[in-house]
Length: 356
Ligand SMILES: Nc1ncnc2c1ncn2[C@@H]1O[C@H](COP(=O)(O)OP(=O)(O)OP(=O)(O)O)[C@@H](O)[C@H]1O
Image 1 (cartoon, rainbow, N blue to C red):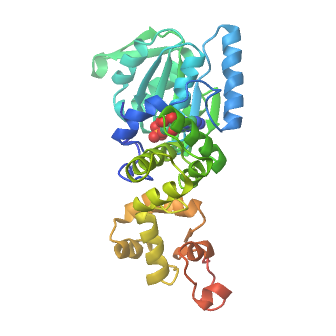
Image 2 (spheres, rainbow, N blue to C red):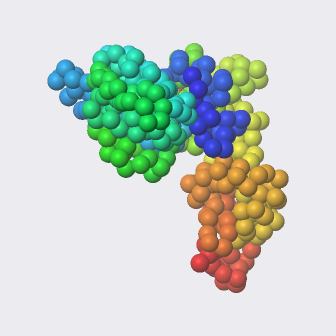
Image 3 (cartoon, rainbow, N blue to C red):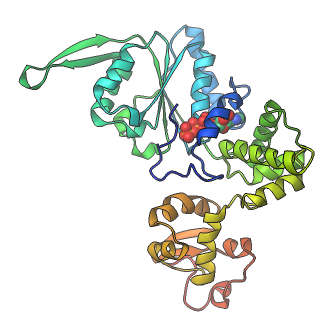
């Protein structure tokens, strides 16, 4: 299955990257919760989805189309498989970038069985003609297949069996309203709380037959950036360390030592994130500094700093994007154990820490 290449700037090489790498794909199948009861966190989404699915089952109907939005690795694919399992229906998995022509979509739609779940990952990256075909398929369970070209082209209507489309997107805002409106149920997936990620780590450890103490799980959860995929990946690296350097048991100290080797710090920042913050603090006194200047200082592309490092730093409240440039927050100074210059610490001097 092709999960990745869906984000514009891939972070798949990083231990704390949220897109799936090859090893993730191999292990994830084994770690996926199989039903709503096993799915950890996202209480509201679970409760609402449970109602939607139960009602459809009670009516003997196909479930409404579902749109799942949220960052990579939060469980959208997992939920789509759970929807199929709960409806006792088969599932077909594809992605927006894989459907470049309306004909590609017509071929998939016309081969669906009644009640089948069609999971369309990165739905916002589908081509325009395919998207328009999808409108009619979702609403009327019908598509017009165009045969021939130019003035002689004719549209042949094709009836489809009722199916459930589960669309997933990292960017709900990019979906055209007509498409968004055709989903009967829309859920936004949030980043997970540390306590929820601890449960994810315990569950995965037990499936992987790894012994872990509660403090060890908490240590991994705290560095997982709110994302189950990252928690599972860090768990695997810590397991390696525990096997090679100790007796296999994951304690708090083992987890911390292992993740220090992989340069993932207590808050989940890796070398790239820390490089950006250190440059901002040490070379530019906390900013404001322009993105291009900052990128040159860390020896990275502008896009890498902006799309790979910054979103997490902003979310963590360590960096602010202001009209005058990038600015470190007081939390950034504290996190790196540095003292801000007097002008910033007191709020005097040249200016407002967060710009105009
Ligand atoms: N709520 C959860 N409880 C337990 N494990 C979870 C949960 N959500 C996700 N996971 C685990 O995290 C991994 C990634 O989940 P999944 O592939 O569903 O994410 P995704 O949102 O579809 O990511 P992408 O957008 O990159 O396709 C899976 O191995 C799954 O086991």
